[in-house]
Length: 97
Image (cartoon, rainbow, N blue to C red; front, side):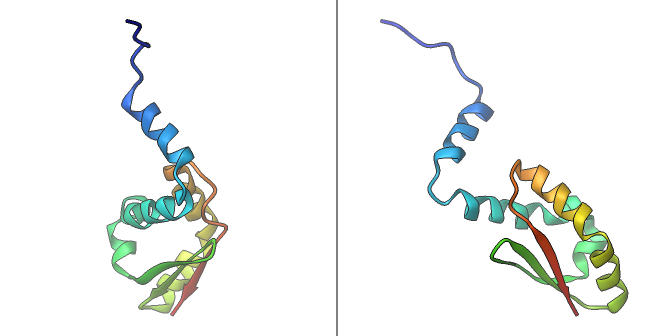
């Protein structure tokens, strides 16, 4: 009887995700759940209706000052969220007030 060397759980999970049929939808869900961790509790509390429109992350904010803050940092936020899920999921961020 031959046994292969054991693999780490993270490598097995990454292999599974690469073959998963709805990989993009799964990673979009991972981004939505990690949003508060990446941007912080204060900024996340100002965001309403966080969702995807194709490959763009769309959100509605309560105050114009927060809209400007998120809009000016949208590329760095997208980069941090994409690196969190190890993929190129967010192309741009749309901020509405």
